[in-house]
Length: 407
Image (tube, rainbow, N blue to C red; front, top):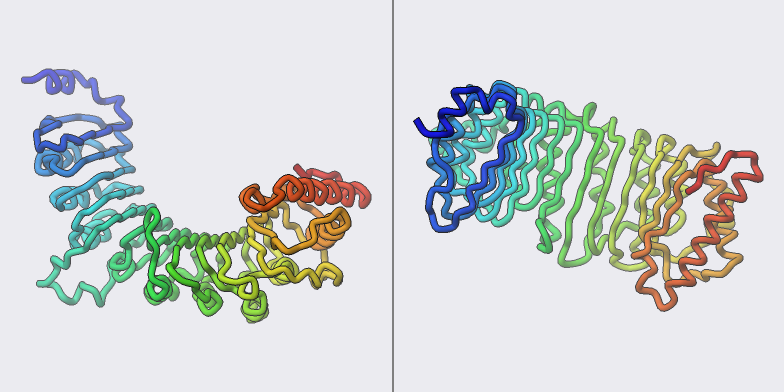
């Protein structure tokens, strides 16, 4: 009986709550050995492996503890794998969170089917895939691939990054509340035609079921050329309960007129509480102007946090009466960009602050990110201008008898 077996018999592992397996030997030598472990309080396993590690030993080790770790709820798999390890994971049927962050690996489609059918309590699934492939090892069961998706009945949180196209083909998540989708990883760009396909596939499988449950959606993508995003706004019409929508992208075209047309139809986004539109412009004309603030104030009455990039230089709306009929309760406003061609004078700062105060009189946070002006010819004057806007906002709040909480 070796040392580990002896201390296990004495109950030394009973208090263990987290187990970290480092299998990083690139020479193929065994860096872990198979041993029994009794850890009834174990809640988390983190497995980090490198190419050349012995997955057969690791897989066997995991299978020896699956019945002992009665409270295991989280499994974190990171590294490069040949496929053997995927056969062991569905055995952990009590898991509530599964995090997979892998490189250059081939993932059997039966793995997704296995965790869908066995992990009936799984609530959170995160898959970050770089240079990964899916193999169809379900040839003898063509009715299951890909026409019938794998149903994750308890999944409420789904986070997918990288090579996730095949995952979206087969995932059915009837009670999903939070979706994070980034069809690239690191610095890679996505072909313009791919992202709409991902969104459409997800909607085809889930919109019928998740329309009353999806509350949080985060989209991040990079394109190699300008992309007109306006036609894809309708992708999120089906989700009546959507409260948080965050979009981060490059070379996006989304004219204010397109946003206006979208918002004016059937009360889309009327339940939104947090909206983030962080994008690099395609052109000034194809980007949002300051008018977007009035539109969002009017059509998104529950909005409490707005993060937005404004590139179009049109300032006409600032001289008009806001179209929102009553003061809005927005408390956080963050600008990722303001137009470079604006006249950043003292008078324009006062005018802009007055405009913001009429729209959002209850602001407690108003920020202009430093990145928006740090590369401008005179960044200090831009910062001073914004400081003037904030000071004027505070004064407006005090004059109306509102205890200013602006920070």
